Length: 97
Image 1: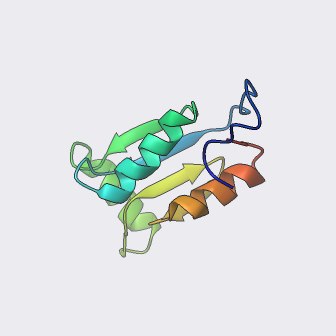
Image 2: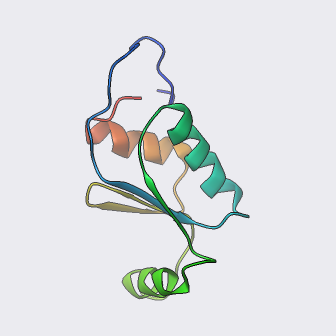
Image 3: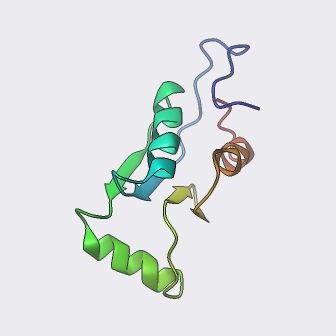
């Protein structure tokens, strides 16, 4: 499955909370964000360089060993996911893109 599925034109993705925590300089963070944007999936973005309090909280939740980006999808946390990982979790939550 790819993030853009042209066989489903006009199909709206269900609204599930999605957030990407990363850095502007992180290639993986930017790749995931671009893929979500191209597919028309709404998400929140938190730049960890601008929000060190969010980074500290994520480090605490991860037990101190944080690998970015971190992607939150409707209750699931993915740490340093591949685009394929993000696609699988989105599909599990009914977001077909």
